[in-house]
Length: 446
Image (cartoon, rainbow, N blue to C red; front, side, top):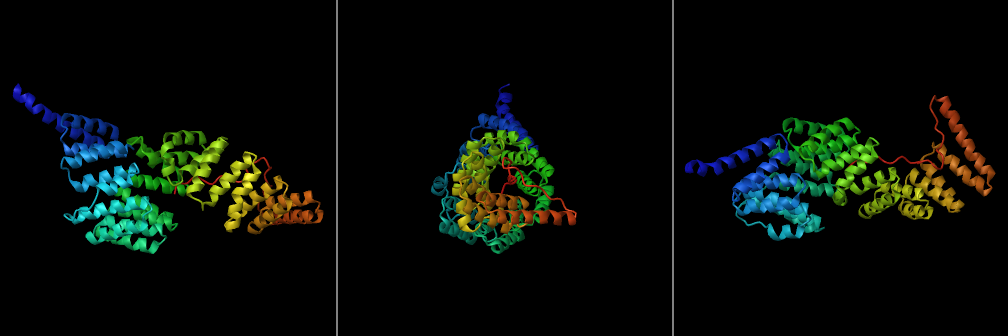
């Protein structure tokens, strides 16, 4: 009996780890987490159990637990080539960039490990806007391990950030030559193709990767993001559902699900999804932009205004966001703020027809008729076939008493209608002032 009880903990531990592996193969992270916790509780010194528990925690969005378990695995002698990247990921997930730089340093004993640490340090330096230091870290990593994939892909990412797409392509090609089936290299290639507006090429790369390695959740998330951009919502939904089935708390999957719901006009559902990841939205490139769109559509204008302003503070060159904020300000009956918002775009020379149309409306509402006419004329020059613009321009001129010019604008509109009928095309009347005259841009994640 004593011998049997002496063997029982070891057998129980083996069962816990075996059950955890089975659950991971099925993508059931919650069940795997339970089994791994039991394994750690049964044998606190088991480094492998701590490592896998840390990986599962990060997949479930718990970077704090990920850091704790990765540290425990490293301290108990688990393979540093696996434990250190996991710890670095946990640090990055908590924005602990300075702590990463303080704790993770190359030792000169293992070239591959040093290269991996230097890459992680480079990403932390990028997050701290230390661009020159990051570039040096990436260069040192490549010098330490010339054939390693990670340094090459880090350089590719830096090149893409500088819009050096040819330089990025060269690095990615070298990475794929070294490891043709590297998931990271293939996902980087898909990202590069998408940046070049080759959506079909990027989709083909991701399709092949997922067919070869169907358990890669990040590849499915990348494909879902891409298919949303290509308006293939059914394909996107299938990938999103598969990821959420295994990782219900996956932040990126929840965000993409919100984008999918917004794209399919379920703004209430999108709002519920965004509420689950509210604390993470500022870290997602277009998270606040999507929130602003959803709140606008739900009539929650104060929240939409706030989200749009926060987004523009981080992305001051996004024309769509300026128009979104102006549209919200119109609905709030604040034409003076519309003028303030869009004047920046007008002065930059980057405005489009919709920008000047909105600006013309705002000037008209504040009694600045001449400025309104000039804005409408600029809009008309950019969209000469927009009969709604011609009508609004004629209306302002009529209000000024310039009947002859107003009639000229209306004649232009009439001739356009005649031309439409002659060509067998439909001509749409301008929307009423109470209508939402600019359709919200589709909330595609970048």
